[in-house]
Length: 220
Image 1 (tube, rainbow, N blue to C red):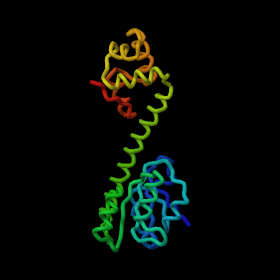
Image 2 (tube, rainbow, N blue to C red):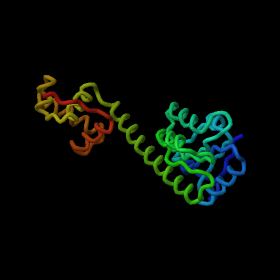
Image 3 (spheres, rainbow, N blue to C red):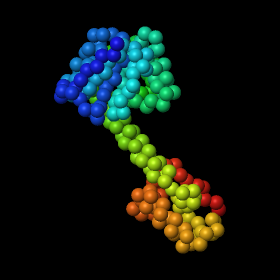
Image 4 (cartoon, rainbow, N blue to C red):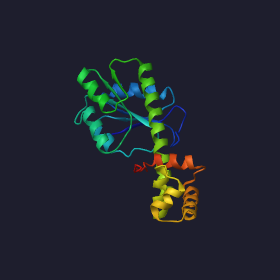
């Protein structure tokens, strides 16, 4: 059964970061829970990877403190399963049986740290703070892209076409020639798409296009 630990500030808000702990040793789970709560972090505890897989993860900045050796699915295999499921939660591995191949595989898989038991409390806290900050930045970046994608979906087919050419560095006159339009028509379309995309300038529009991965190799 999942153990939930609230922060020391009372009932936590949905926006507070969460530390997920997957560790089969009950005493270690309690120790980690006490450690994280001591600095005001919200904690959710699991005795196995399968328990966490069955849970719905909230959309807040978080990290996963994960034991390498677990009953059933191992920590490293769980890392692989999370990646396959497109779950990008930062992982801090811990083990009492660590070796170089394990740590190399963990880090190549994207782990932010690999701590060998017994570890210093401060080392764990430092790793968790860094992991949560990494996750917060990733979520902010993902939201920016999602918001831009929503704006992009409001563009007409012609506006999308012109945006692609603008992102390629073409001037209005060149775009007009390529599309067989009057230059004034291109200017009107560009004005409309800039407004829809919330672009303050041409440079801002190009940056937004790059963020969305919109680009076109300009022909020589």
